[in-house]
Length: 361
Image 1 (spheres, helix red, strand yellow):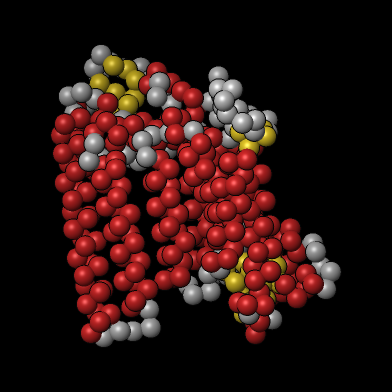
Image 2 (cartoon, rainbow, N blue to C red):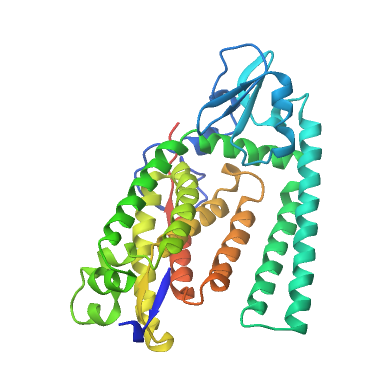
């Protein structure tokens, strides 16, 4: 979410748990049975094949499958069926392949950590010898990214069982991703096309954006339209990508909660930015990133409350990613609103703690 300056006019749980508020939920059974490999897609042929879940593309033969090893990661779209096992599984679930797959994945982890460490050293030295306007921010962003990658390696990526769990969780989530991403795409396209009718972002903002001075004058309808105005194509594209990722995971927990949290967090982040405007000297806030951070906070608190329903250390994985997402926008755009992002994250986190999710069978 960006700010504009003034000048730019589950199921039932044990009785020992305290009672929780709850909302009805449709779908979401994935969270109870994601470890059940029999729920994954089936292969009708008894042989080696790999399937790309998104485009439903299949490749046949063991040699073709083995070529995928050097590219595999836990979030890979490719799942594999082997002779005698017709279920399409993550490659770490294929006994004959898992050792080589994990070795390849580990080598790439080491290489990535080495590159991040070298980049951190390079940017750090550059910042000392020849500091520029944003050299310190880039250095800090690289250090934070290195820290997140290193902690993720220590907690998850060095343990084949934990990586296997993460890959299986991702494969189950992706079963329903097409419908979710299609919905997000249609929403964001409508938002983008409407904004194209205006000459520029400033014109769209003044007409329908969350301009605090206009809200103070009584144009409260801007609360509904303001979050959907974006600064430029890069701002819109970034929100589009992150929204798709967040919604796919959030809807696996609860579609109802995810949608409600998104809109509430959009409004609370706007309100927080408005409340802080006398101190930040901004008169408007743009974008749906407050709502996206709300979904991220909801996922995070759900993983904290119900760790048994997620892969190992999922709470810490989400926490570290949120840390990066809070900081990196300031490297890319100094007008990013920390107030909006933090308030959106806090809204979603509080919602997840307050409301209990009820799993379907």
